[in-house]
Image 1: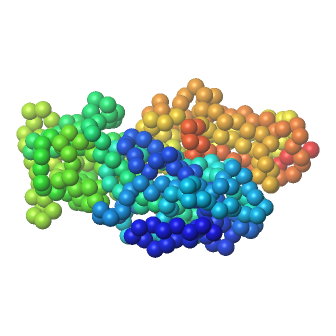
Image 2: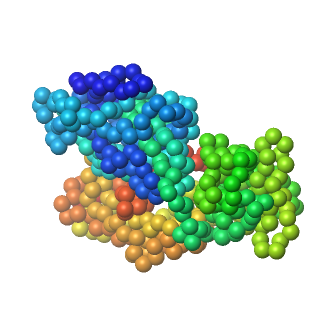
Image 3: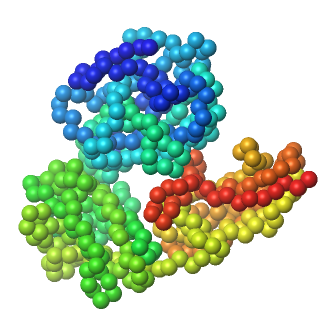
Length: 469
């Protein structure tokens, strides 16, 4: 196997073993120096040493680390010579002229995970590890969207193998570094789509341009909040972002005071004119009703609040009020609602038949509820599968026969969505099942199904049926 030396690191061994039966031969990236908004596009080259007995999802993630000045951010790739095909003799040696350093070390739990893929089967979800042939080289393309919400700096690039819909990685390695640039100029507020524009000024130093938050929340659930900040003039003070939730009597029942972006990109580092997005999770109460929301900036040591003028000609105050959130219990149509990534609920479904002959068509009625405004248009998939996961009938189309895209749905709205799927004339007799869910056509990434603790547990629903011949 090829060996490489990386300055300021031990000499790693290539290829890198992920357990006994899987090796990572190397990877190829367009560039690991990125100016947002852009994408990190990277192809991993896996090899099955022997038959893989379990399915794993491959995930990339970016983790912060203070690297100092001793390491270059431009650690790009090692590309195996067998990337275009497999060889019965195994991977060929990579010549010095074809090789650039790859760092293969155990990932550290230190540092904040800024960006992580949801995970799916390799090769865009189409080639599970149990199907890999021993000796085969599997190119596995990944694309991560790098937005301006990611602070500039250098991040560790890690890859891991996870059991499907589990947060417990089985194998993982750090394979390099990604350098995020600041860029020469800042994004203009006019270029942003801010759902709730505001322009609240904090002592003439910082301005809250606006925010995004769902109108509806679930009891004991979480509601995501995104704040859009801009620096107006130089400042050397690091402020905490203070958030409060209030009940219908105006009493504070939840609050958070924390440095922005997990303390790794404080306000003193924000450039004049720069727009910074911060994300927060709001904890909803156990009771239904209206929840008040307000935001402020505070000094970490004293807790003193920075005065804010929340709107034109408004008086100075310690807090800037935002629009309230309505906490509602979800109406259930047919058993427990199914949560697709806190974006869409499946309230229920109705299947006109559970026995089907080849050539016959079934009708599946899905009842969706929109939880939050979406910019994306998701495709609904309905597949008829046999016991070996082969597809014998399918429909992939936007909701309501493609006439009502999810980007037009309104928060709280309930949508009736009917799909007709024909079972193939060649379908053999046996037990079949229907899988249904949603995915983004541009990336083919499915929306995960979340449990009550907001953990991904699947990416579809399953309905049993029979092929009756």
